[in-house]
Image 1 (spheres, rainbow, N blue to C red):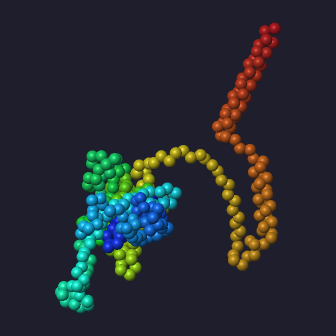
Image 2: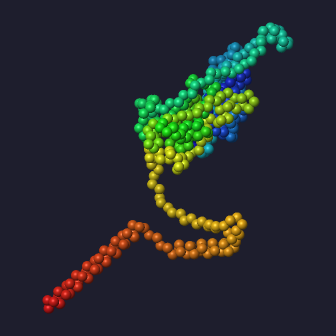
Image 3: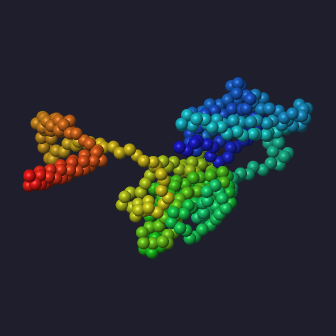
Length: 385
């Protein structure tokens, strides 16, 4: 189970009377957000249940702590605020993330005699020209590479590789260059292509999830560093050792829409929600790859048997026999007969059956041998006299 956590970065905006705190989580957030050492103050504790966008404010006066050494008469006052985010996980456990915010509260003294009485006079005096403000960021470039995966990140981990052995641990990495808070991405529609006949086999579907976690795991996204990874073991398709992997990468924005408050990455969504278990169909060419990957020991399972009874009545939609009392009576009689036959059955182990059969055979052989010996001896005694 993937634990809930903060997606991307937490945003803190220092305002005139307090700090504004905004976060986004992977799953709907259930838990509390509060100021450290201020949990008894009602305005410093916020409780959420199944919430997506978290945007709250903490007052300097109630929740903040003024830095030592600042004076009231100074031109500015510094406050610090430790914000605690406590997640209530679906399995009943809790996890905590902590953030420290530093804000400077500036004091500006106005000369009331010089303040313009009208807005037009202020604009004319300060020569302010209204302008359109746009949020722009350079479009990043998506990059994909296949690298070695070494246990515990030992020497050689993360090195680019082009030739591998079947079963060798590998990792596919996708990332954005340069990293940016304004953009995210979504990996989907990955295909393994046979270099000989050009046949394509899907390994990551249009939602961005693995089609078989025994071949490729679900992509794991690190939204803080704009990177996604997939862990896998090298495999091949029958009669070919040259493969290529191609993926589609959709770049989206992490800038919230002014009307809905959602980003285009939220709408996809990315990271995607993928099932815990998914395998290839038996008619897939990749189904045979089980023999080429590292096996996992799942333990020895106890054998068991299940008896299944199925009633089948052949007829068309207008045939009333299948729903008739005669059919029901015949069905009950059949079940009763099977039940009696089952009660009279006695089952034993094959090992015991083999042992008993062997013992019986040796007993018969011994009896025949003794009978022959007694017969010969009796005849010899009779002839000797």
